[in-house]
Image 1 (cartoon, rainbow, N blue to C red):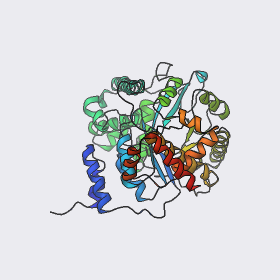
Image 2: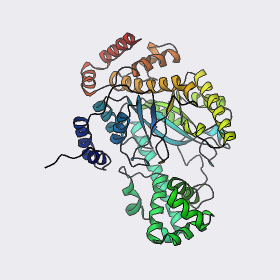
Image 3: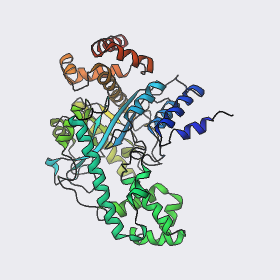
Image 4: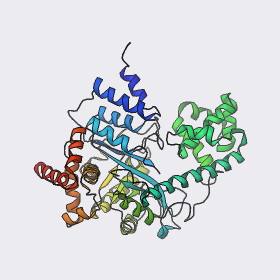
Length: 453
């Protein structure tokens, strides 16, 4: 009986069965351990897994494995409305000795900007927002656990309403949630991009002939059949975005203008994050919307609610063909980084991997990012250090112990970054920290951080 190949094991990392994924990762680590020398200074601290939507259908284990293969400095999971991949991802990090953190992303309503678009296009008052560095899942029965269940239910209800409207508008490609949509997500909590994929598949079944299918989509998207055929064949990511806009964005049958009741209040979300020992985190798009035009105002409003970090997807601001647009957005990026740094907010960056065109990680030596590289690396270190201190020493970045030990946010960030810069946690050290207990684990990590200075 032959042993499974590396390629076979990597494919198994994407299996919806968690045991299959865990066994495959253990076998890969034993049979083909990835190199550990010459770790790069590149990071991806905002990567979606197949629990919400990953363009390659990668699991948390596969993401960790790919990060280790290319010697990333650090990697963070960031899924929508759920934490289903948290323990798997942190365990994979320990097995592979990879610096890791786990975040959650959602949309929330920000009342002071009720009439302004912020960073959710076409949705005034709605902001993408994150909770970064969850050390563990909230305990059942606690307020954070209840809030997490409410996020899940709200997303489920929104999906059902949107699908009902799209099915009514286009019955020929109507989908069944149980049959066509839920199986696309191992968590059975599909996202907007899963919905798009389900309708694309339904159209392929309803119109097997590519020409007939192109005619159908042309009527909906206001493109010619020839344009649709070319996009579907040669540029699937652009085709997906076109269908997404036609079915789900403003003016489409699956779109309903948001209200204060559509999404959780931003203040409630920040309270949930802090109660979960995570870090409420501002997200930023590109600075071109009315709500982001004055980053100082947006930051100060969200800091007042408890936000203590920011998230950026840098590629949106420099990987742009049009020189004029690129110039504007790179200037906006520099302004936002400056305003965040002035407020001592760690900066979390990543590439999402929700499109096949996304690079796996930001290359911090690139000309457009080089000037920000030290801040981006420090931000990753803070997230990793916070995760370690919160999980093993009961000392989250915004917790009582941190506030007692460090007088200013700058001092606190510096220390947490030093902990995050320590050699990556492995399973034996994790077990040792658990044996020590929170107080001794904190003392050990403090000592090691000081030695590294």
